[in-house]
Figure (cartoon, rainbow, N blue to C red):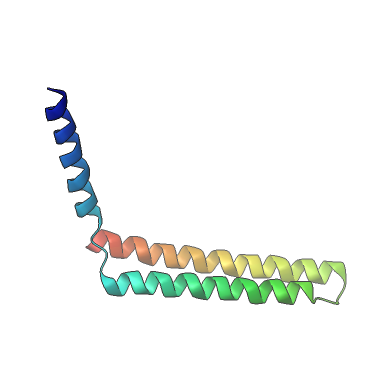
Length: 88
């Protein structure tokens, strides 16, 4: 009986994995490209922030602006990924 329960649970797990893994190769490549682009942008922003020679208020404003841009890009990318997952 334990073997039967184990096999049923294993079958359900395998079925769920195949049902959820419907992302196409092009979509996977786009996700990786978006991740790399975000990391590169973050690095550039951190360098700009470290080199900021203006007043503290202006440097903090630049930092806040950069974080807002980064958050916006992440939300946009995740929305596209979710849309792609829902349409498949």
